[in-house]
Image (tube, rainbow, N blue to C red):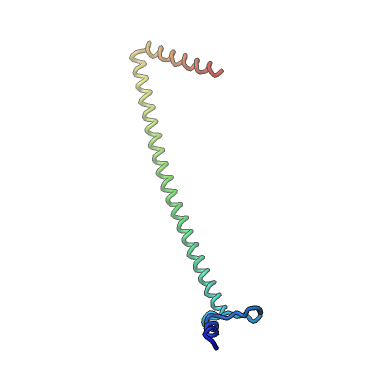
Length: 123
């Protein structure tokens, strides 16, 4: 017996040329035991990945909800500010119109002429 033969007994042997005489063993474990342990590890890994993906999805949903809430709050603030600004401008125009009615009529006439010129240029 040679050192090569001893090594083949420990790590497995393969008969070249005749597949029916081929056998492989890894240490003292049987191939079925190794296969079962690999299947168990694969199931464990699958469970871990599923939990990770589930947690990631939940975290993403939570983050999305927070961002949507912030956007909604900001949009509400902007709409409120725009409404206040429009009311302020309207009140100022009304005050100027009451203080100088002829100027208000002239301004309205000028705006009407400009709108008419823009409309005619397109037609």
